[in-house]
Structures are given as structure tokens and as C-alpha cells.
Length: 295
Image 1 (tube, helix red, strand yellow):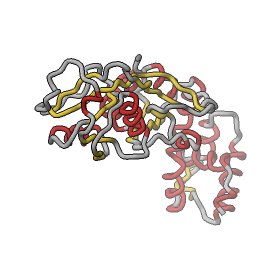
Image 2: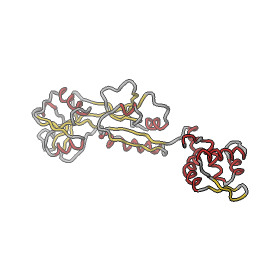
Image 3: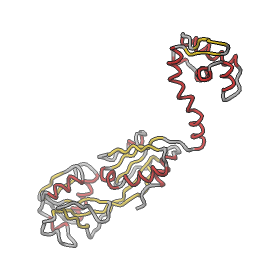
Image 4: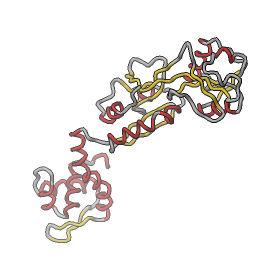
């Protein structure tokens, strides 16, 4: 039965409940309407629901019944806030939420300051930040994410991108390692040792394998860890060495670990903010892109 309810009948009910009478409701309406028209709206609504919503307690003085009170608690907030919502939508100044999926490294090292700038620019915005272990472009396509922040060797044609940072490769090895004090280190010098990688199948793992191959490094064995922090902990425990892509030009810092830039050939990876090319006009997404880090 509720599917038959129309908005204008609920509006008539709202104004009578808010003002306490049919004549007062007609005067309070945001557009011209007669008292009999308001009365008709309420009468038809009561007929559709099969209950009385008001009882008369005086001349042009109506009081909500128990059923009317229940209905008013539901529709009241909607009609109360409708004028301000309409003004905000018309002016383009509306709030809402922005869903950003970012790889774990960027959640920690890139997103906090970005979100801080964004919050200052749009105080009406709520950011939902999801730590994504894999880059899933389908999240953009189905609308469950507004932005992806990650590196991909190639982005699909239906996705727009903007560079917001650069990952630089660093060799990380135990601080007590014989080669840790060198200012320049060749990966090939670490051949025959254990390499600590990201889990197989991910983009970060492929980046590591590519660098090992390009530098002629052939590890004796491999261990895997799920995050940069875990890899650094393994290195600190002297379980092996690793190669980490890092945003900070000084590389990762952790007691017991030495980080050295990867030299000749230097390997860099662009960090991108990505969104659907056919995304409807969205001031919140525009604000996020305007406040994004500059590489």
C-alpha cells in the first residue's frame, strides 16, 4: 500500500502537522494552494492508509493521532531539510562522501596530508579510505570507488589518470651487512643471498622481479611478506635483503636497516590517481584532484 503514496499528499500532511491546521498549512506552503486542496490531500492520504492521521481539537486546530505521529516522525526530517538541500544542489555546494581505494604504502605515506588538505577545502566532505591490497579497476567501473591510488604498468582506456607521485627503488639490507656502508651498491653483489619479496601475483612483486632481472641479481632463495613494514622487519632480523619502491626520496627508515638508492639503471614508477572517464560532474572528485600531491 505504501507504494501508492504520492509525495504531494505527504507534503500536505506535513504542513498540516507542522502548523496545526488546514488554513495555516495553506498559508505556509512554499507555493500557492487553497485550504480545500490541502484538506483533499490529507483525506486521500488517510483513505490510502486506512487510518485517521488527525483529529479536530478546535476551530482550524488539528492534532496528530498516534498513527499520524508515527508518520510525521518519518516524513518531517525530509521536508524540513528539503529547501536547504535544493539550494545546495542548485549552487553545486553539496557534501557527501568520496571513496578512495589506495595501496597500503600510500595509505600511510601519501594519503594523510592529502586528506588533510581536502578536508580544509571541503568541510562538508566525508572521505572513506580503503586499504586495497590489489588494484581493482572494476571498483571504479561499478561505482564502489571514486578514486584509485596506485601504480599499474598500464591503465585501461576508460580510466583517466593524474600523476601524483613517484616510487623510487631502494635496496634494503641489514645494517650489519658487510655491504651496508657502501654509498653505491649493485644488486648483482647480493646474488646468492635470500631475497624478501612482496607476495607473488601482485604488482609490487612484479616490480621487484623486474628490477632483479634488469640488474642481474639472482637470489639463492625467496621469502615473502605482505607489507613494506613486514619486509623491513624481516630485513632487520637479518633474514635477507629486499628491494622496496618508496615515495620519500630518502628511502625507508627503520632501526637495524640500511636503505640505499638503486643505481644504474635507476628504476622509477609513477603513482597515479585514477577515476572513470565517464564520471558525472562531481565537485567532490574535482576537489580531491585539485588538492592532490604534486609529483
